[in-house]
Image 1 (cartoon, rainbow, N blue to C red):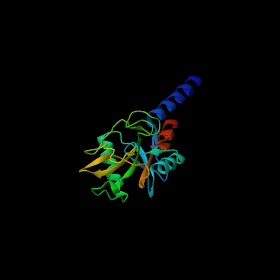
Image 2 (image 1 turned 90 degrees about the vertical axis):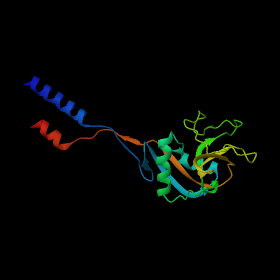
Image 3 (image 1 turned 60 degrees about the vertical axis):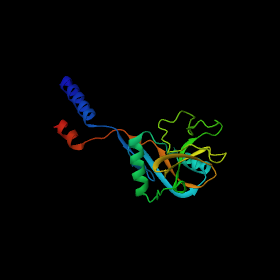
Length: 179
């Protein structure tokens, strides 16, 4: 009898493990976009204020991982009401800068290399002597990054990884195993 109970319990655990998975969610005010959670702030701020605002939320300014991420992000931002006209004036801040790194653009969160540095044509150009921060825009005929002075005010997007919700039980499976 004890052997039967042990075997039944082992089967129950195995069945539960097979049926459960980790669910990744974005807690409000963040929204799921691809494998990230985004929070769009339409109120304009300079790069430093935008960066601090994201950090207060446990996030960082958005950074694109690859072309697919760029396309998903662009469509999401358009759906949130950002008007990406052919101008740098309609940018959002990115979590990239060259502050203290004389024209070497790095991730703001940790100083690492940027995984996907997709500049628009003719950028970075350091048109004014202090273009040390990076915006994302539809500019020079393409969506991508451009360098700009950190004091300019743009809306911004905070990003963070989805939170993992660990165990899910299927009640009907649980009852079936016990019967």
